[in-house]
Length: 321
Image (tube, rainbow, N blue to C red; front, side, top):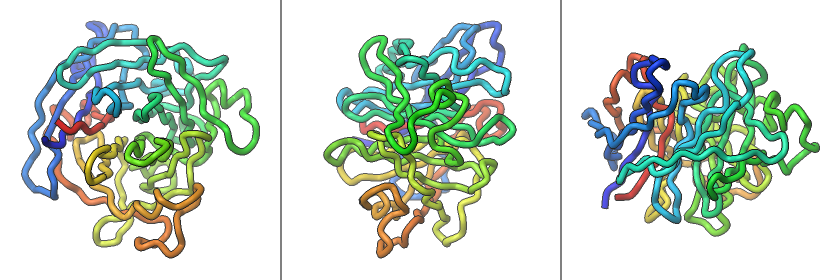
């Protein structure tokens, strides 16, 4: 058995008139940092129609019950005047053997997703989607959590069971339920009982608070105070790119982060934060100090047009094959 990562790119040629071709790539995850370039293999292409306004499949997760990979699209395209979350798209089975099936979940009431960026992962009962906005120019900075049932077509609903009552603006996707806390990667801890503990990632600086993890309560939708990401030398991690996040849900647990350029990071020192009760910064006497984790670059995946920024690869998940 070996550990493989999966990612999905944006429209391959940037030409919406011929539909949108989103290539899916698979690559070996190194067990330790390497300076050698990681070569990916294209496993298939998700073809979406030209009128798919929010076609980017930014949220990628592995179902622990089936071992299959599914993806959910971003909430909105960039710009304040664009429609709010016109379509929710879930594409299943984008791993090997590649056989994508697309569904469009219905909404609970007036629930529409907030933000422009998305991360996703499964627990044993549903697909969860974190949607957020990092850029003050596009509206309020923050994130909201959504639950998508795995039936076909399924139902998407806002998870907001903490603090003040949900407002109409939060239901309609114009305000976040977690204001000021942007995240666009989601990893659920399926090795522990309950399957309700998770982390969200933020590898952007333009949201105003640096690179962080957040504990996520899947029952309430609440994000913790930020857990700052540091380099192995103890400096603040200073990246500005969309991210993905994934746990290994078997054997010795690892937490891996992803940049849209193809960089893979291993995150350590988070154990005290995940185990701490509640949604604070963690246990004050923790081994790594409260509120910090370390991100170590494992290597770079050589994805077509990724480094140049022509194609962004924002979704990320892990499969043991």
